[in-house]
Length: 328
Image (cartoon, rainbow, N blue to C red):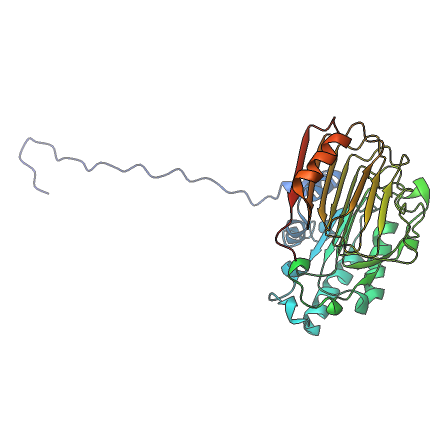
């Protein structure tokens, strides 16, 4: 840089450097009291809770206190399985079983709020599944969601390949002693003589369920606290009668239940009724609060059926009657 005499040299301008923040090596979160850390864990999903075990020694076993447990086949197995092939690799099954068994053995919490398992096998490993249910019941489970197939029943070609798990209703407490509030079952065999073991349920969902034993039309009459009932792809039930004992029932959905010939409704607080399936006899005795009716039947005269229901249920605000042309 040249400088003329008497003329000061131009000083190069300094560029302001970004402020350097000091990063403290102190782990302030791990210094919180145990009850606060437990609260944080309970707010996380199961996967995120397990990931916290690598944060520090203090967090290593914190995930074992979570109360919402979910084990999904597609999230745990190494690669997706095409269940329509009718076979499930035994190596994947052993891996899935081992994950659940080890986690439950390490669980330190005194309470399980929800317990969910979704997999592609049933009765072949019934003793292992039953142990999981026993664990959940002993921990006072409130929501139980079990599914033992990964396919869609509508696309199923061979129903003989389905490995229905025999659901052990005898494991649940009688009457009000049970903590169970929500129960969802898929691809199980359910004996209809569950007596008052489902008395505390407010929600019951049965999908692809084989109702075994002497199936009585009033098999759900002991579910005194039931508010929502869903029956889909169930078989073994010829008639369904819901009477005055179900005074809390508000929503009823019955869809594609093979062999169902008649439905009798006398639930005074029922507000929504949806039905899809074969041409079935529908009887409405005492449903003064019914507001919405949706009927999709195979092989019916829509105009005649709509007129009959409209005459029988003049107080219903929304009524839909459709003929099912898709099913043969």
